[in-house]
Length: 210
Ligand code: URA
Image (tube, rainbow, N blue to C red; front, side, top):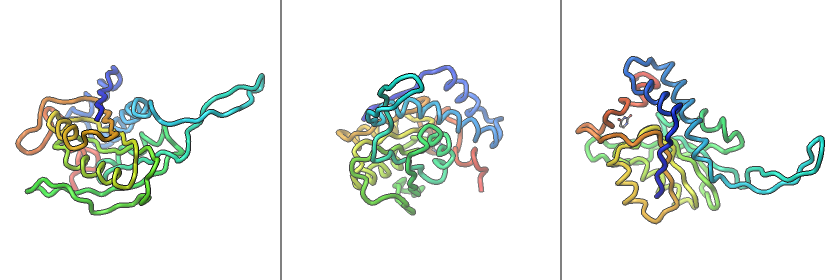
């Protein structure tokens, strides 16, 4: 597994406002959206392209366009949904799948409660979206499902990560073609499974606590 922490002043600025408990839901959603677009720029650095011949008003030349099969973007419900627009802004031709994952609060085991994506992901580059890499259980289960379906290159875009979650991903996904792109690896997880200093419950901050 590769880990890429995006070091950029705009990323740090937006992340600071996201962390601030005074930031309201509407501002939080807008900033998360902008932050994802900045992370998406880095996350798509290795997106596959193919050469094409074109003609400008002046001359013939060659360029590139995204290859087929098209990349697949998979937000993990619920909070990953708040990252979808920011990602597809840079990849408007991507296909979108959905993965609903829930964590048993006692066993902390993640399981799938809803899936909507192609059964066969052979040869596909997949971008999976989840704002918080905390214990790592949800992302590991999601990525294992994508790899089981044949995905041969998976990039997880997360706003924030905990070192404990990164370690779990490295252990559980050793030898798999997985990259994690994040704005920060924070200090630690607390006893309630929250990232410290973190930003609180990402779903609640985006959508309220209903
Ligand atoms: N999920 C969240 O929304 N926040 C955390 O800090 C950890 C997991």
